Image (cartoon, rainbow, N blue to C red; front, side, top):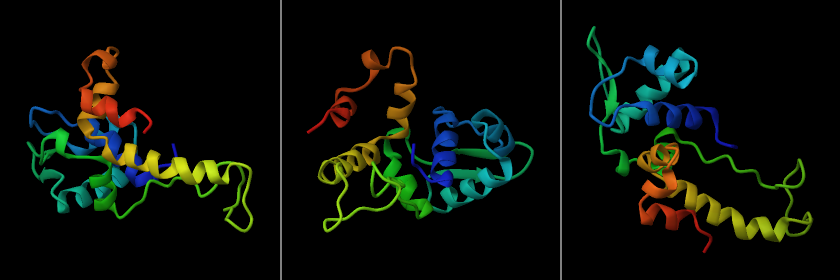
Length: 151
């Protein structure tokens, strides 16, 4: 995907935090998410400042979700990190195209990009967890399925 590294790492970590409220040490979380520990520690501190996660120091410390996983969306995380989704300006060429100099897909991408952003921004950590279940289509709430269908 085109997500910035900090957003990608944050989402990978958040999906792996237990829904039951138990804590995970950042080094264990980094290992589970297969991301660099020091970078993830900084990301998690930023998410804690935004009240997305709660962090506790000490031998029984670690991170846990500060909200229900249904209340944490990609948009929430992206805003906390000060990141966008990182979708390219042009999907056909390695340069930004524009109305005066469009590529062949310019008008298509102008139409699809906002819809894709809305869909992705609206997905919650809960939705992402469900979609990683082998039977996700059966268990995914109707509302989340509607998010994935084109308008």
